[in-house]
Structure formats: structure tokens, C-alpha cells
Image (cartoon, rainbow, N blue to C red; front, side, top):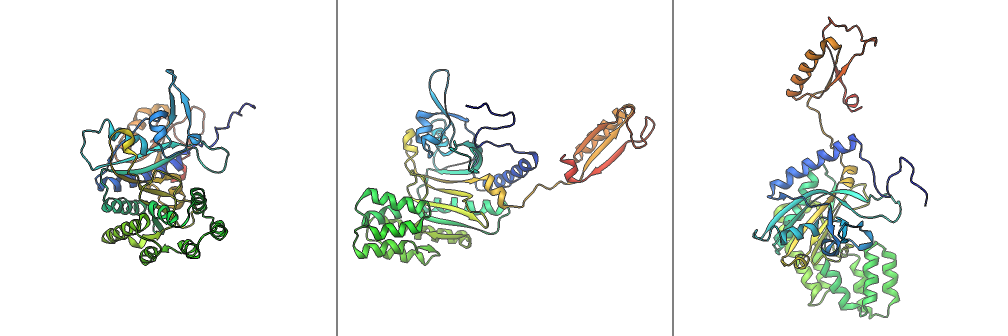
Amino acid sequence: MAKPLGFEKPLGMRDMLPESLAKQRYLEAALRGEIEKWGYLEIATPSLEYYDTVGEASLTTGERMFKLLDKQGHTVVLRPDMTAPIARVVSSLYKHVPFPIRLYYQANVFRAQEKEAGRNAEFSQTGVELIGDGSVDADAEVIALAVACLQSAGLSSFKIAIGHAGFMDGLLEEIVPAQADREQFRQCLLERDYVGYRQLVDSLPLPEAGRKRLHALLRLRGGKEKIEQARQLTVNGKARQAVQTIQSLWEALEAYEVTAHLLLDFNLVLNLHYYTGIVFEGYAADLGSPLVGGGRYDHLLARFGRPAPATGFAIKMDRLMQVTNHRPQRQAPALLIRYTEANRRRALREAQRQRQLGRVVTTQLLAEGVDSGGLDARSDLEVVEMREEEAGR
């Protein structure tokens, strides 16, 4: 194996230069300010977790985890998500805290990439978890909060698609006998392969009525009117219950007055098997990948010994940065104070005074023999007002 070059980084890793990092920190502050208004408290967990606990409970498959051995021989992983670590904390250190519990985080997570395809192996997320509330109003709260977060980040053109994990499962169980065939349908919808989906419908030996129902599924994407259309495709069972849940959810979201940013997508499938109910993804204009995703996961906490319903979402900060023009604004232009050695004390005192007033100040000692623009030991200090791009150099 060839030795990496001096400037190479591990696959999927990247550097963040000051300009990009300043924008991310600015957006994180905007999101943090919005989330805390809703009563959520910030939490931080270790970057390393045991594979046998958090790793196995994670939403991420094992082959996408960074695994290491500690000195005791235990397998540890760089956290592949934040939901499982928070479930661990709520079931241990927070076991005395009554439900519901509202927590949020701003942290980096790690997922190994098999090849360079423009995907990061380490990326930052801002997310929330609402634990211990199984009501539809809890689902409505996190979706409305996701809308508020995107708005606080400066987005105006975006949509959040809402589905239900039980609807797809229930409908396929009603129509498609073989589990292997049902998995093929799920995979087609996950990959948005609608041509392959239709070909699969037509290739299986299904009753004509069932075939029509499966084709009609692809048309269940839109507004409130899709609820009744979805109900007509189901019989009494899991899928019908999912439709009723979505109807109740929509009514709660109407009370939040956020439905202009929402649409229903009854064929929405997420690549996370632990979701048990409402699921959702958010898209912005001119961005092909979802920038926010989440849903209900009512079984995860039981793995840590404290069964409880839960719901939440995560915003991918790198994608959010691609679609927002929000930038930190300097209150005043930066200053450069140039001074000779004889004027050092007075120059640094003036620099500190300006910083206390909120200015950004850099200083520069003029070496002997260097053109000082006329400055000498007897002159006044030179204070130069810099443009923002000059200050960042």
C-alpha cells in the first residue's frame, strides 16, 4: 500500500477553513437560539462509545462505523449518530429525570465511506430528541420546530415531506405475500426508483386489484387531500391506523400554522429500520439531498433498560450551509494598528481599548529599516480600517 502524501487526508475527511467555519458557527448559534426557545437543553456525549452498547443500537450499519480496540480489548466506535448515545444517557445518568425530556445537540458524527463520492466521513449535525411522549402532538412539535429552525437559518423555500413507517409496511403486507418481494418494493422506494417499482408491480403474480393499489401508492404525494386517498387504499389494519395517525398529525400541524412548508408522502421510506411511526425529510430548493430528517423511534430506549417513546430530527450542517446565504455580520470594520517599537505600549493599549468597544483589532510591529509609510518613533500611531476580506487574510 502506497504511503499517503504529505497533504492527503483520510477518505471522507476534510478541513474547514476560517470562512466556512465562521458561517457554520453563525448558523449553529441561530439554530441554538431557536431550539432553546422551545425548552430543549443542550447535551454532549463522548466521541468514543462501546460497540456492544451504543454501536449495536445505532441507526448506522456496522460496516459504516469506525471501529477501534481500546487497551482493555473492548471494541469502541466513533459515534455514528447522536440518538443512541442520548438514549444511553437518558437510561442511566438521567434515569431519575421524569418524562418528557427535551434535549438537543450540536456535534460531529462519523460514518466510514467506501469510496470518495463527495460524502463526508465526519460531519456536523444539529438535532433534537423529545423522549417520553408518544402523542401525535409530540410528533407535531418536532416537525414544527424543524420548520422554525430552517427559517431561523434564513431559508424561505423548503418543504418537509411527512410519511409513516407503518403505512408502507401495512400496505405491502396486505397485498404482497412474500417478504423478499416486499423488501424489493421498499428498496425501490428508498432509491426513488419508480421505474423499477412499476416493473416489479407488473412482474409479480398479484391480483389485479392489488396491482392497482400498488400503482396508486406512487400518487400519494401532496397536500391534505392525500389522506382520504390513502385511506381508500387500505383495509382495517396497520396501514389504516397509520393513515389515522397522519390525519391527527396534520390537524396538530395546522394549529402550528406551518402546513405551507409541508407535504404528505405516503411512499416515503427512510434507510433507518428503527423508525416505528411518523417519519419526515426536509428539502431546500436546488439541493438534491435531504438537509433534515427524523421521525419516531419508540423501541430504542428499551435496549438500554428504560422503555419510552421518542421522536426527533437532525439537521446536516454542511448541506444547510450550501443553501443559505446567512453570514456573520461584523458590527464594525476591523482595525489594523501599525506601530514602531518605541510606540509599542501605547499601540497595544489602544488596541485593547478598541477591543473592549467591540472592534476586531490586529496589530503589526514595523521592523527597523522597513518602509513604515512615514511612521517613526515620534509619530502618532497609524490606525488602518480594513475591509472584511482583508481582515480574514
